[in-house]
Image 1 (tube, chains in turn brown, yellow):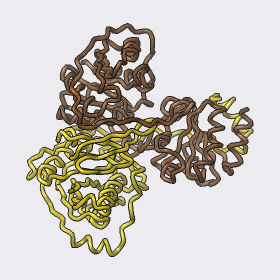
Image 2 (cartoon, one colour; image 1 turned 90 degrees about the vertical axis):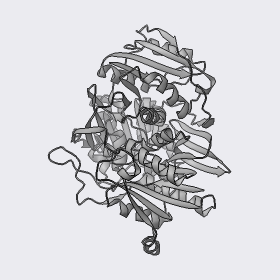
Image 3 (cartoon, chains in turn green, purple; image 1 turned 60 degrees about the vertical axis):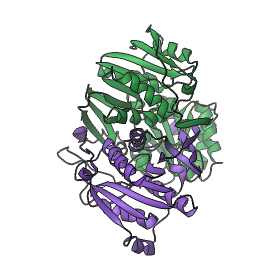
Image 4 (spheres, chains in turn brown, red; image 1 turned 45 degrees about the horizontal axis):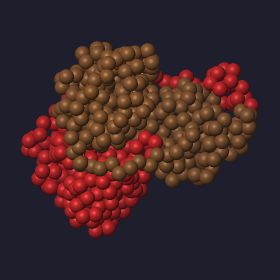
Length: 310
Length: 249
């Protein structure tokens, strides 16, 4: 078996989920090659070559890979995929965007968001917002797989020494033109990589009230997240969203504030190691997954917690 | 411009599903069903574009058993003009959905296809991207805004960490994210009107597409339960537990 992992990176550094995807590849077994498509992204290719378990790195450089469109990236992967038994990418916004195109053009199914590897053709994946785990088998000649990064430990960085080969870039299809990105600027850690996450729900009442969560987050070096209800209510942008339709996280500590615990939110955070819930409703479903909970007014509890951590 | 909108019938988002006792699947008999929430957003978007004058006709499409007609009637009540059910009694997986939509696109020639980004039953998040690839069309996945001018679209889409702006020539496949719009409720008069709108049934085989599933479900199971936690009296006790018992701070 031979596995191609498509790396997500920002030109100089690999995104955190890449290391977890390598672990999933190693669990399948066989040789692991990594594709780094970018523009002047030699540093990211060099970093991938050092990751433990990586056999070789394929580096494609072109201006249209700086923020690659799904169309261009899928076309490039397609030129390489036939030599591999598996193509993997993280089930992040990056992988979810282009991987189904790869699968469709290979006329194979995609196995989305795997949380475990049973064998080279059989995988476990959560369905129904993580309330059910399905074990599925693919008989397709090439398995196109996206990986739930919280379900696999990161591979070790820095010990490997894989060769980096240049591969020819594909043409720019021009089907879509990426005109720019507006990234939320924050000194806090990324949600998907944070050790601690403080999340707010509808109970926060307004976007302005998220300031008390930010103060708590700063004490804990935590990321700030939100429930779908808080995003729907316009309190915070969608990239804060934790849940079935947002980000899937599994930090060491998850503090849910004013979040009732809808199925779709629990889907995104119930694999966290320790869950703390703060809610004034004693019947809130979030308490069913919490290790510790306080039934009280969040506007009293959160500032008090921030103070006591000081 | 004609718009094709995909709608899927799924277990209602508020229902907690149960695994069948033999582990072969999920219990769907006598369970409340509804239109997939992201498909509702897709229908709403098409209806708003029609109200704004950029869209002339909305065709709602579903693939599945005869019960999916109910879901199509909901789309008609929201404002779609007509509906097509691609009927099959097989389990429908995303590649099959994409192939059926491709066949319909070749016949209907829409300028835009709008689908939900993900169905809340299988959580696959694939069909729209697959359709765009099979047609060789541009894709705009996870959109929060779309504006059509002439033969091109300006799109804002949700990405990890923020937003991305795209432009694309039509025809285009777009998949909806949460913030695109808030779907309307259907009113009784519109439900009555929807009953008179045309709903066409075609067999998957008549479209000349193979909808056989590619993935076999070996088994389904419930995930391990979290061990039950404890209520703490106050912040001081919480901090003490986090420090000394859980050791996470």
